[in-house]
Structures are given as C-alpha cells and as structure tokens.
Length: 479
Picture: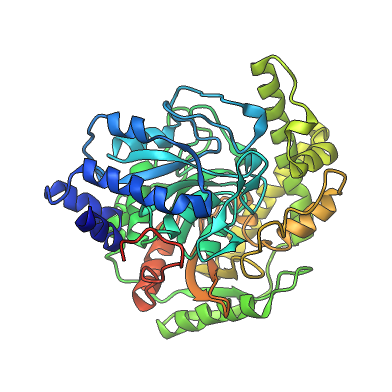
C-alpha cells in the first residue's frame, strides 16, 4: 500500500479520481488505504461517529466526477441508507432513517465511497465538537485544542489527511469555523443553491445549508457542481450559472473592491486574530484588489437575539418530533446543557415573536444586499481568537442564561452566523498560523448567488500562498 498512500499524500479528490479513470489505481485500493489512514489517526482525534467500512466495500461501482474517492458524511441531519443518525445526541439512540439525504444521493452518484460518518455536537448548536455521546473531537494541529464545530469531525479527518474532503453543513458557521480551526478551505453556499431535502425544507428558518470542507479550492468547486441545484419542491432556489464552478476557476480574477472589518463590537479580537485578517488584506492588495476598512454593518447582539428566536423553536420542534417517533418524550437529562439552555429560554416563544425574528433576517438580507452594492466582497476574521482548548467553550451548566451562552460561544465566533440569515455565500480561507502553530482563517463574504467570485478569489489566494503542504503534527501521511 506504500505507493497508494504516497498518492493519497499528494493528491486532492480530483487528482485521485483521475488516477482511477486512468486505471493507475483502483477504487478498492483507495478505499482500503483510506481505512488504514483513518484507523491510524482516529484514536488521537476521535472524529468518527460510525465506521461504515463493510458497506463501503460492498457498494456498487459508480462512475462520476469523483469515481472511487473515499470520504465521510457528517452525522447531523444528513440521513444515509446504511448509517445511524445520532445528531450528536444520546436522545436518538440507534436511530437509522434508512434513506438518503438529497445531497448524499448526489455525492453517491458522483462515485464517492462513504467510509464513515463524522462527529458533530448535539443538534449542531456548538462551535466545538464535544458531546456526552462521543466525547471531544481534537484538533490535529494540537490535540489539546478543539477542531471547531459543528463540522469538527469532518475538519479533523480532512486536516489529518485521511481523505481529501468531507461533507459538512452550516447553520451559523459550522463549515467555516472548523475550517478555520483546522487549516482548511470551507465554503458555505448561498441559501437554496444546495438542497436540504427530502426531510428538511428550511433548516433553522433558512439558515442551514450544506457543502464540504476541503484542502483544495478546486475540489470545493467540483463538489459544488455535483450537489448544486434545487431538489423537487424546494422552498428556495438560488441563482444557477451556466458555466460550471470548476471551469469558472480558469477565468481571470478582476480587481475586487473588498470591505475589511476589524471590529466585532462587544467582543474584542485577539492580537493574532487582528494580525491574521490584516495579513489577508495585505495579500489581497498585493494581488491588485482594493481594501477599505469599514464598520460591520450589523448590530451583533440584536442579531443573535433574533437568531435564537429561530434556532430554539426549531430545535424544540425537532426534539418533540423525536419523542413522538420513539413513543416517549425526550428527557432533560438526555440533552446537553447548551440545548437545555436555549430550549428553556426561547423554545416556547410566541408565533408572533418567531415571525418577527424571520422578518429581522429578511430585513438584514436586504440591508446587506444594499451594503454590497459598494463592494464585491466583505472580509472579516473567521474567529476572534485561535482555536480554543477542549472544554473552554463548554463550561456552562444547564442553569446558565442564554446571554451567558451567547457571550461564551458567539464571542468566539461573532461574524459567521449573520450570513446564514442573509443567505449570502461565505468562505473561510486558511492563510495564517499563530505563534502556537494553530490556524486562523479569514472569512470572505460575497453577494447572494455569486459563489464564483469567492471561488475565483480563493483559487488566486491559494496560488499566491499555497496551504496544502501545511500538515498538522497528527496526520495519516505515509512519511
């Protein structure tokens, strides 16, 4: 397997699929190598919710853009025929939906092989992947630190070079935050570009979306080609483009007008978070783009109050549905402290208040669309500080207030969730490592439906400052 592992060390997903098409390597060889790689690192990073080795070996061969390439699907609101779906919670037990999510079906049809599901915090409400059910998922750059959340398992596995990319979803930063923590590229698409069916119409009132965490920008673009496009009966549909996202990377990047945000309102940026975004801004200027410092055009405390008026009732609805399905109400002791806090304080708000929160989102979307008329891209830090240590943002007990929860969680990550509410595409790009050798990503936000602008910029940044060879100490590489 030495040659196969060397190949996996060097190739992104597109390159691996090309090797399969040329018959330089077989899907079986890639599959067994990926299993070996996962077994090598998972005892250290604890990033797998369920191993699916047997079903991956038995899966029928499928040709497609990613023929034979191994990957994992996040264990959060992404049902798979062969997998348990725990959503990071004790409450779901061994529930197996027995059907494929729309995105899973499209990924499967592209030729991908699913070797497992990746860990997530309970119901995706945490920016760190730690749960009573699975324990803590650790950062391959430093095992004392979190891989981020909620797609933390996916991030840790990809950063450790087990597979070139992994499925993730994002309701408030859950692709971008772990990408920042683990030194990966993570794109959140525009609302409605990627389907969420057949079980979910609009996750968290339209905040939820699906894509992937990748090492290379071109893999992200090619995956978007595979999964984009509304499914039958979807409540939202984002603009689609005639040129594929992958092919759009070949276009010349025009000089962009970039708005730079250096202030998170009530939550201070660490010196290194500020240094990271300034480093990114200077890199952009060196590539011919113009950068202007602006005030963040959103009142963040007001936004987060509205956000939990949406998140909490949606979570309560799901918990009650779960109780109905299993024939016994979910007990408080089955839920994490953070879940209990938001359900207690905002789960039973009035229909009027819920509607007002949704309208707040829609107003914000229009305001941001107006703001973006003057800029092509908005640039912010992804996080206010380096990845936290395990347990640092999971210290509250169930008696804490929602304000304390927001302060602890969103004080660490104030910029990402806003763009779930507005529906704009956003990405975290790995361009900076701290003095402690921990990654700190920069978030770029585009206009609604303009993923190509972000992807083209990301590819330009990747070429100017390549990150693929920045390998964490805990890794699955052959050398």
